[in-house]
Length: 258
View 1 (spheres, one colour):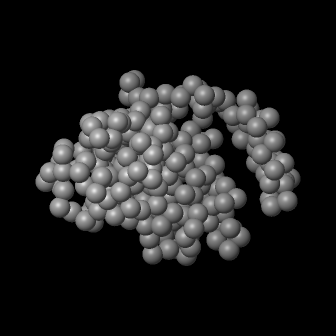
View 2 (tube, rainbow, N blue to C red):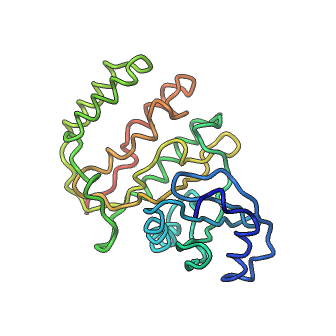
Protein backbone atom coordinates (compact mmCIF):
# COMPACT_ATOMS: atom_id res chain seq x y z
CA UNK A 1 0.00 0.00 0.00
CA UNK A 2 1.26 3.48 -0.91
CA UNK A 3 1.75 6.17 1.73
CA UNK A 4 -0.77 8.43 -0.02
CA UNK A 5 -3.49 5.82 0.47
CA UNK A 6 -3.27 5.96 4.26
CA UNK A 7 -5.28 8.57 6.14
CA UNK A 8 -6.61 9.06 9.66
CA UNK A 9 -9.69 6.92 9.00
CA UNK A 10 -7.57 4.03 7.73
CA UNK A 11 -5.31 4.14 10.79
CA UNK A 12 -8.28 4.36 13.17
CA UNK A 13 -9.89 1.32 11.54
CA UNK A 14 -6.65 -0.64 11.96
CA UNK A 15 -6.46 0.26 15.63
CA UNK A 16 -10.16 -0.38 16.27
CA UNK A 17 -9.99 -3.79 14.61
CA UNK A 18 -7.14 -5.12 16.77
CA UNK A 19 -6.81 -2.77 19.74
CA UNK A 20 -10.31 -1.32 20.28
CA UNK A 21 -9.43 0.06 23.71
CA UNK A 22 -7.22 2.64 21.93
CA UNK A 23 -9.49 3.49 19.00
CA UNK A 24 -10.99 6.64 20.51
CA UNK A 25 -7.66 8.36 21.09
CA UNK A 26 -6.71 11.30 18.89
CA UNK A 27 -4.88 10.24 15.72
CA UNK A 28 -2.73 12.63 13.70
CA UNK A 29 0.16 12.27 11.23
CA UNK A 30 3.68 13.32 12.16
CA UNK A 31 6.99 13.45 10.29
CA UNK A 32 8.01 9.95 9.23
CA UNK A 33 11.19 8.16 8.26
CA UNK A 34 12.15 6.10 5.24
CA UNK A 35 10.81 2.71 6.32
CA UNK A 36 7.73 3.57 8.39
CA UNK A 37 4.85 6.00 8.35
CA UNK A 38 4.22 7.46 11.80
CA UNK A 39 0.94 8.52 13.40
CA UNK A 40 0.48 9.93 16.90
CA UNK A 41 -2.05 7.99 18.96
CA UNK A 42 -3.13 10.10 21.89
CA UNK A 43 -0.36 11.78 23.88
CA UNK A 44 1.75 8.78 24.78
CA UNK A 45 1.67 6.37 21.83
CA UNK A 46 2.49 6.21 18.13
CA UNK A 47 1.40 3.88 15.34
CA UNK A 48 4.20 2.76 13.03
CA UNK A 49 3.15 1.43 9.64
CA UNK A 50 5.83 -0.26 7.48
CA UNK A 51 6.19 1.21 4.00
CA UNK A 52 9.17 -0.72 2.60
CA UNK A 53 9.89 -4.40 2.01
CA UNK A 54 12.48 -4.53 4.77
CA UNK A 55 10.42 -2.63 7.34
CA UNK A 56 8.40 -5.56 8.78
CA UNK A 57 11.58 -7.43 9.74
CA UNK A 58 12.89 -4.30 11.45
CA UNK A 59 9.65 -3.87 13.40
CA UNK A 60 9.73 -7.52 14.49
CA UNK A 61 13.28 -6.97 15.75
CA UNK A 62 12.31 -3.86 17.68
CA UNK A 63 9.26 -5.60 19.16
CA UNK A 64 11.47 -8.44 20.35
CA UNK A 65 14.36 -6.50 21.84
CA UNK A 66 13.49 -2.89 22.68
CA UNK A 67 11.28 -3.63 25.71
CA UNK A 68 14.25 -5.37 27.32
CA UNK A 69 16.75 -2.66 26.43
CA UNK A 70 14.47 0.18 27.49
CA UNK A 71 14.59 -1.00 31.10
CA UNK A 72 18.26 -0.08 31.44
CA UNK A 73 18.60 2.92 29.13
CA UNK A 74 18.73 6.39 30.75
CA UNK A 75 16.96 8.13 27.83
CA UNK A 76 13.50 7.23 26.51
CA UNK A 77 13.22 5.16 23.35
CA UNK A 78 10.12 4.19 21.29
CA UNK A 79 9.23 0.99 23.12
CA UNK A 80 6.74 -1.33 21.35
CA UNK A 81 3.54 -1.92 23.31
CA UNK A 82 1.18 -3.67 20.88
CA UNK A 83 1.62 -5.74 17.73
CA UNK A 84 -0.69 -5.44 14.72
CA UNK A 85 -1.25 -8.37 12.37
CA UNK A 86 -1.59 -7.85 8.60
CA UNK A 87 -5.20 -7.16 7.62
CA UNK A 88 -6.20 -4.11 5.57
CA UNK A 89 -2.52 -3.23 5.75
CA UNK A 90 -0.72 -6.21 4.18
CA UNK A 91 2.21 -5.98 6.59
CA UNK A 92 2.51 -6.26 10.37
CA UNK A 93 2.65 -2.99 12.30
CA UNK A 94 3.22 -1.86 15.88
CA UNK A 95 2.09 0.65 18.46
CA UNK A 96 5.00 2.06 20.47
CA UNK A 97 5.53 4.71 23.10
CA UNK A 98 5.89 8.25 21.79
CA UNK A 99 9.20 9.96 22.53
CA UNK A 100 8.80 13.74 22.62
CA UNK A 101 11.34 16.13 21.15
CA UNK A 102 12.63 17.52 17.87
CA UNK A 103 15.28 15.81 15.71
CA UNK A 104 18.73 17.14 16.54
CA UNK A 105 19.59 17.84 12.91
CA UNK A 106 17.04 20.66 12.93
CA UNK A 107 16.94 21.72 16.58
CA UNK A 108 19.23 23.96 18.61
CA UNK A 109 21.20 22.24 21.35
CA UNK A 110 21.75 25.05 23.81
CA UNK A 111 22.70 22.86 26.77
CA UNK A 112 25.69 21.17 25.18
CA UNK A 113 27.39 19.88 28.32
CA UNK A 114 24.24 18.12 29.56
CA UNK A 115 23.60 16.76 26.08
CA UNK A 116 27.07 15.24 25.93
CA UNK A 117 26.55 13.69 29.36
CA UNK A 118 23.14 12.32 28.33
CA UNK A 119 24.50 10.80 25.14
CA UNK A 120 27.53 9.29 26.87
CA UNK A 121 25.37 7.72 29.59
CA UNK A 122 22.98 6.35 26.99
CA UNK A 123 25.74 4.77 24.91
CA UNK A 124 27.50 3.36 27.95
CA UNK A 125 24.23 1.72 29.02
CA UNK A 126 23.47 0.43 25.50
CA UNK A 127 26.93 -0.91 24.67
CA UNK A 128 26.69 -3.92 26.95
CA UNK A 129 27.10 -7.61 26.12
CA UNK A 130 24.26 -8.95 24.00
CA UNK A 131 22.76 -12.45 24.29
CA UNK A 132 23.76 -15.17 21.86
CA UNK A 133 20.50 -14.90 19.91
CA UNK A 134 20.81 -11.14 19.36
CA UNK A 135 20.58 -10.01 15.71
CA UNK A 136 23.83 -9.58 13.81
CA UNK A 137 24.86 -7.67 10.70
CA UNK A 138 27.70 -9.19 8.69
CA UNK A 139 27.83 -6.19 6.37
CA UNK A 140 28.53 -3.73 9.15
CA UNK A 141 30.40 -5.79 11.71
CA UNK A 142 33.79 -5.44 10.03
CA UNK A 143 37.19 -4.04 11.04
CA UNK A 144 37.27 -0.30 10.51
CA UNK A 145 40.31 -0.43 8.23
CA UNK A 146 38.31 -2.32 5.60
CA UNK A 147 36.23 0.82 5.09
CA UNK A 148 39.16 3.05 4.15
CA UNK A 149 38.16 3.35 0.49
CA UNK A 150 34.64 4.41 1.43
CA UNK A 151 36.03 6.84 3.99
CA UNK A 152 38.29 8.49 1.44
CA UNK A 153 35.51 8.91 -1.13
CA UNK A 154 33.16 10.46 1.39
CA UNK A 155 35.84 12.70 2.81
CA UNK A 156 36.52 13.98 -0.69
CA UNK A 157 32.84 14.82 -1.07
CA UNK A 158 32.88 17.11 2.00
CA UNK A 159 36.46 18.33 1.75
CA UNK A 160 35.45 21.99 1.48
CA UNK A 161 33.39 21.82 4.67
CA UNK A 162 35.80 20.06 7.05
CA UNK A 163 39.41 20.14 8.19
CA UNK A 164 40.65 17.32 5.96
CA UNK A 165 44.01 16.99 7.69
CA UNK A 166 42.43 16.68 11.10
CA UNK A 167 39.74 14.25 9.93
CA UNK A 168 42.33 12.03 8.28
CA UNK A 169 44.45 12.18 11.43
CA UNK A 170 41.52 10.98 13.54
CA UNK A 171 40.82 8.21 11.01
CA UNK A 172 44.44 7.04 11.14
CA UNK A 173 44.33 6.90 14.92
CA UNK A 174 41.08 4.96 14.79
CA UNK A 175 42.28 2.23 12.43
CA UNK A 176 45.52 1.91 14.39
CA UNK A 177 43.62 1.18 17.61
CA UNK A 178 43.78 -2.39 18.95
CA UNK A 179 41.06 -4.66 17.56
CA UNK A 180 38.00 -5.24 19.69
CA UNK A 181 38.40 -8.48 21.65
CA UNK A 182 35.49 -8.10 24.03
CA UNK A 183 32.05 -9.70 23.80
CA UNK A 184 29.50 -8.82 21.16
CA UNK A 185 27.65 -5.74 22.38
CA UNK A 186 24.45 -3.95 21.42
CA UNK A 187 24.72 -1.09 18.92
CA UNK A 188 22.12 1.36 17.65
CA UNK A 189 23.94 1.35 14.26
CA UNK A 190 22.10 4.38 12.86
CA UNK A 191 22.99 7.04 15.40
CA UNK A 192 22.98 10.22 13.35
CA UNK A 193 21.51 13.58 14.44
CA UNK A 194 18.06 12.93 12.96
CA UNK A 195 17.67 9.98 15.35
CA UNK A 196 18.52 11.95 18.49
CA UNK A 197 15.70 14.08 19.92
CA UNK A 198 16.07 17.44 21.63
CA UNK A 199 13.82 18.97 24.31
CA UNK A 200 14.52 22.33 25.96
CA UNK A 201 17.89 22.54 24.25
CA UNK A 202 19.08 19.14 25.52
CA UNK A 203 19.34 15.69 23.93
CA UNK A 204 16.44 13.88 25.56
CA UNK A 205 15.67 10.72 23.56
CA UNK A 206 16.89 8.31 20.89
CA UNK A 207 14.70 6.80 18.14
CA UNK A 208 14.78 4.54 15.05
CA UNK A 209 16.32 1.28 16.22
CA UNK A 210 15.63 -0.67 13.03
CA UNK A 211 19.35 -1.28 12.40
CA UNK A 212 20.00 -2.47 15.97
CA UNK A 213 22.46 -5.37 16.13
CA UNK A 214 25.17 -6.98 18.23
CA UNK A 215 28.67 -5.93 17.15
CA UNK A 216 31.45 -8.49 17.31
CA UNK A 217 33.70 -8.35 14.25
CA UNK A 218 34.43 -4.63 14.27
CA UNK A 219 34.51 -2.26 17.23
CA UNK A 220 31.69 -0.59 19.15
CA UNK A 221 33.70 2.63 19.08
CA UNK A 222 33.53 2.88 15.29
CA UNK A 223 29.71 3.11 15.40
CA UNK A 224 29.63 6.45 17.21
CA UNK A 225 30.33 8.61 14.18
CA UNK A 226 26.87 10.17 14.19
CA UNK A 227 27.47 11.70 17.57
CA UNK A 228 30.47 13.65 16.35
CA UNK A 229 29.73 14.02 12.64
CA UNK A 230 30.02 17.36 10.91
CA UNK A 231 26.20 17.52 10.90
CA UNK A 232 25.93 16.99 14.64
CA UNK A 233 25.15 20.03 16.80
CA UNK A 234 27.57 18.62 19.36
CA UNK A 235 30.43 19.21 16.93
CA UNK A 236 29.71 22.81 16.00
CA UNK A 237 32.45 25.25 17.03
CA UNK A 238 29.90 27.14 19.12
CA UNK A 239 29.34 24.02 21.18
CA UNK A 240 32.62 24.57 22.95
CA UNK A 241 35.90 22.78 22.42
CA UNK A 242 35.79 20.78 25.64
CA UNK A 243 32.34 19.35 24.97
CA UNK A 244 33.19 18.45 21.39
CA UNK A 245 36.36 16.68 22.49
CA UNK A 246 34.46 14.88 25.19
CA UNK A 247 31.89 13.63 22.70
CA UNK A 248 34.65 12.49 20.36
CA UNK A 249 36.73 10.81 23.05
CA UNK A 250 34.49 7.71 23.13
CA UNK A 251 36.08 6.62 26.37
CA UNK A 252 32.90 6.84 28.48
CA UNK A 253 31.07 4.76 25.82
CA UNK A 254 33.44 1.81 25.62
CA UNK A 255 31.79 -1.39 26.85
CA UNK A 256 33.58 -3.34 29.57
CA UNK A 257 35.60 -6.44 28.88
CA UNK A 258 34.30 -9.59 30.49
